Amino acid sequence: MKICIDCDDAAVNLKKVIYDHLKKQGLDVTDLEYSKGKENPYYGEIGYNLAKAMQAGQYDRGILICGTGLGMAMIANKVEGVFAGTCHDVFSAERLKKSNDANVLTMGERVIGPELAKMIVDAWLKSEFSGGGSAPKVEQLRELERLSFHPTNEGESPCKK
Image (cartoon, rainbow, N blue to C red; front, side, top):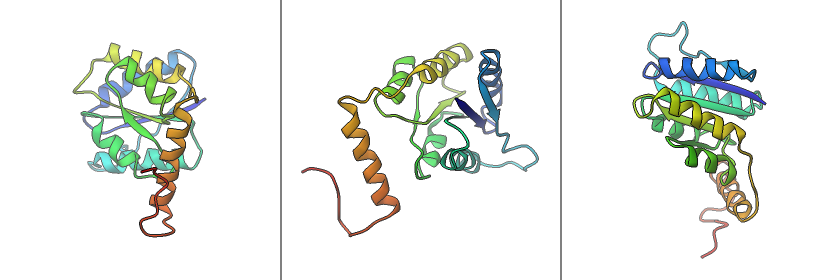
């Protein structure tokens, strides 16, 4: 599994903790370091850069960290094929993958501490999409995403009323 990670200036410390934690486990993790050499990039640029790398198939999973994780999730979800969610507890991290098949995890350094962040990342990385009752829901998410990025008929929706 190829993993990428990045952060804005509000989460440099937590990114280092997570990056080192993953490296110690022998995982294939790349720090995209979008901010390196740039003057004060906002989290939108950083999250978008990682999401585009995910979209291009360069990585299997991505981790974005900012102050709350919320802005990173918002921008990552603007890129087709990227499904991101913010998690600040282990159960949500497991469900993010098992129930929603998300490929990007976002977290906030101002919200959680390093030990909990490591547990969240571990739980998410160890989880796989379970299918079952979640499969039709995730397929609907993907279809709605397709309609959003590639509209065919105005008002067309696969949602059942």
